[in-house]
Length: 299
Ligand code: GUN
Image (cartoon, rainbow, N blue to C red; front, side, top):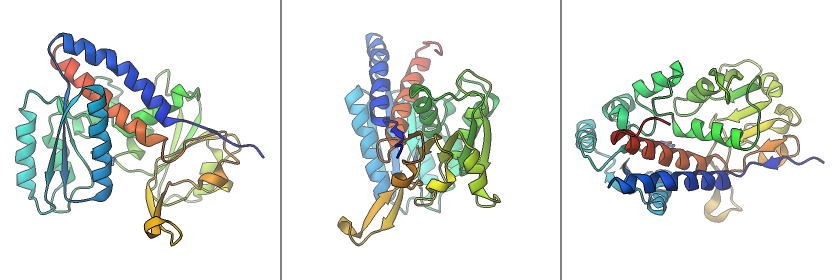
């Protein structure tokens, strides 16, 4: 039985980190250390883990970071006031407000309040608009940008490919589709977005040369939804009940990994696929924000 090659996100993220090291060293010769602020609101366990990983990567690379942890009862005004202070702090080149945020705070207002030039998450409407326009001077959202990098560095041919993106979220689905259908050497794909109202999702998926699962449903993609030899990218992180697992639950992706592996040509593992790439792209955006702040032009 054929078995898909695994796309090693950890190894590719490590390559990207190596490439960033010399840019960070070049900034140091100018007396500049890239700086990134993290903001967490409330005690979401997954967010605590994710921000912890991002802090560790900053430490490893020599990026200054500072984390602000606010209570789950924080008002919108309090959070916006903190963001205004971070916007004007010259040590900080990037600001990231980890999602999810509590319901009393409007996520759109948060995205608009972070200055576009410090929006290393790529969530500000100016950066989202630039992405859609194909203007590379903005910051691209880290998870979809990381997936593009994974595909390119794994030798996957994107131009002309039929891509199906499962999910239309603002974090992954929509920016992912925008990136892949753009005119460009590593884009130029024919993209279909499927969502909860799509008729016959399976038929769409079976046409895909590249299938990107960002739908947030545990093990949604089954083997019979995948064209033999297709590239499958699993973005999902879902906690499922499992009495046999430690603590009674375990994490699974949006792809039925074991069965899809027998059909796909290439497949991202989960963990170890998309996650490390999101962090590497965040580091890349932060270094670029620092470079732009000292007048090093876009490269
Ligand atoms: N929550 C899950 N992924 C992300 C991300 O890339 N950025 C932010 N801000 N929150 C997230």
